[in-house]
Image (cartoon, rainbow, N blue to C red; front, side):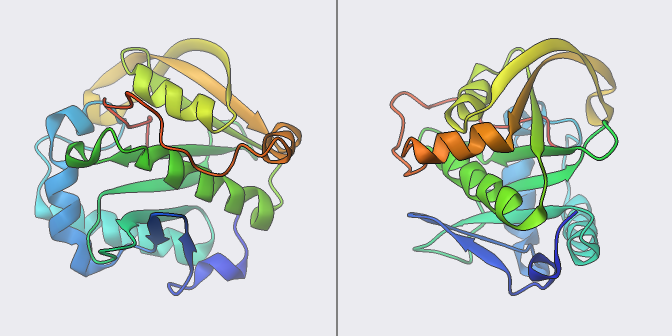
Length: 212
């Protein structure tokens, strides 16, 4: 899915306030603490609760392996002022539709309300369309998570419907809203000059999509 450029752990993305880079073992403590918050985990399909350091180590190893293989691209979100501090993750991975790709993300509860989810998601979306040759992205968010919905809408996604989705870490099927962004809409979105990040007001909630 991703080219050689992204398959090296020196690859990173820079935004106005953030660095997005490959996860590393030194990040395990931050990832464990942030992902271990129940309000974060329960909005995702794959983060168990409780979340232990063993989970964190396994996540880092698996993310690095898949990044290296180009199967997906998972980056940790770090503040530019403190690039060693992980505040969340953002990922693009194969979707359930053959040949498709899906966006997932989560931001730690300590950092809600600052627009970091939108800023990180936009950066990875731009990288996907610029480097991978992909034609469209999908995403989903639990119906009880309007804040992730707003993040997706601010990234140019449009809702395509609702339905049930498997959440292995939650123990079964849960209702979600489905979203889609194709290359043409992404190009229009950028042409409208809306990709320069502006922090949204009142963005204070659970900022996590159905990350796999």
